[in-house]
Length: 170
Length: 185
Figure (spheres, rainbow over the protein chains, first blue to last red):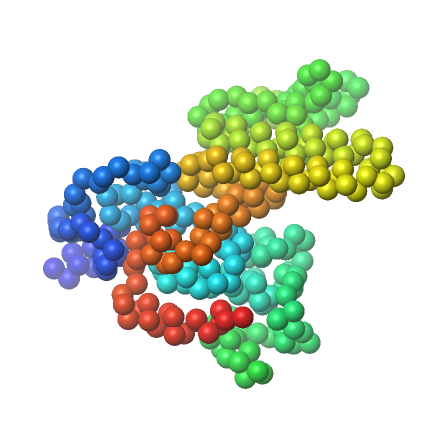
């Protein structure tokens, strides 16, 4: 029983347990949860309905459809979010966990933090940066002036610690 | 001239005085594009410089439909760059109006390209532009997605992109509390 549950946790659908937006019912078939939904009405021609393709991510949920946005490699998703305005980033923060993670990183890059070399997502460049320099991306906004003169390399990777140090300077 | 061609490899053939490269999409379809246009892709540029691509460049990660759009973009931008390079008045610096209008036209063209895509095709193009390292195209496509998110609530965003909310109510509250202030400016 315990093994079955543990395996179910690793399964595609078992990760998404809160179906607050889901109008369909779920059923447990064997170890996996399978969503059974009523036949959908007409979708707009631009809706992202697509059956699962093996080369994309395993983020499966209702109707076996995937979110193309969430299927993007994380570094590409971050690049997309770098183009999003700050007020829109706030909304993205609570859309879903994967999007939230990418949003936080995109915001971090906006603030020109030093990027830790260990992370794969920072392999090429951050928001708005073109050169190969390992340093922080260019700062475009006057509001970031509080960071000037600060040793960017010393800012911790730990997000809340980093933001807290910002707060204490206000 | 023959020696020069030999150095670059047989895939860079000349057609009507313009050097062409052959690309093969993931589904085995062959495409031709001018070498000038291929230069817009950092990846292709390196492959061409490396030489040894006698039978064309295979792109197993790029489907035909997407590759078509990539080539359209690159040819358009390569032509525009060539035009502004060869424009004598641009060199003299006296036609800033012309160059501004030309770049505005190019932007309009880019927007038209991305606006005409289904969400499916748009994301395929983003991935291709990222893989081929075509900055301008990645820029234009990502901006389109950002536009689609503009002014939308989380729920609207989920609907548009078919995203499942995997936050519990409590987790969502915590996220808002912990990070919302960091986004104030």
